[in-house]
Image 1: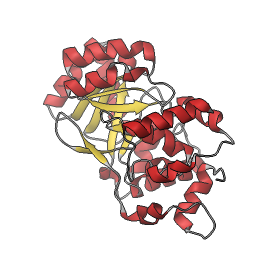
Image 2: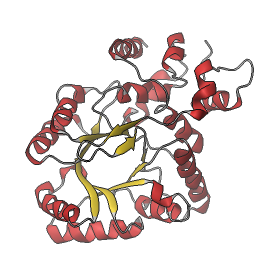
Image 3: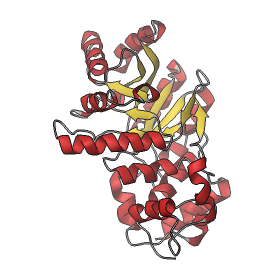
Length: 307
């Protein structure tokens, strides 16, 4: 089987041109909706693939990049993605998200998530207000405590904001394996609506206990770093997808990595970041169609270890 890049796979699916890599099930893909999972604390349905904005949306006043990012948001929406995750830590990303989405007719269709990343109660209150202003939201869908910074202080603020209807949900985040025990303790003790952490096909520490803890406690899971900072693409560069990927409706390495994550039932949403429209289409398609079962997950893992 010929090896296809992300761009080529997307073109193959959309053009349905004879002689390209087109599997029968993809002819129906445009008619399918992205898969959803329920947020345990409310039952609200959340699409499986969202969008991270670290680095990719730190566009400042670059008008050409802002136009490109507008296309990213529109393509995300067309393919069923809704969650946009940002943070005060991400440079101008919050403001860029707010500026761009405010000009779209589908502005209120997105699920907006950001974070508080500071110490002290008043500093946290002020930062959250600034984030909501930048993202142009009178109510934020989700505020998370970034990397557990001063989390006990911000916990009280977020619970109060939720009770007053200023935010829909609150949560905690981190991005390292060494943080998983601390996250698990917060989940057990405080029952956050959401937890966000790192997990990938080659970084499976979360499988030891954190995913199960979140599932048992009814905490929704958002996954960051699904591509291990791009190292997974470097590992598979020049490598062909195995032929059996057709059966799993996997058309690219990005979908291979994302579908492995999404086949874990505790995961509500994965948030790969990108500034490229063709990449966001590719990423979103991982949330469409079937997901691997347990034996297929093992097969995927064995193959990626072998190359």
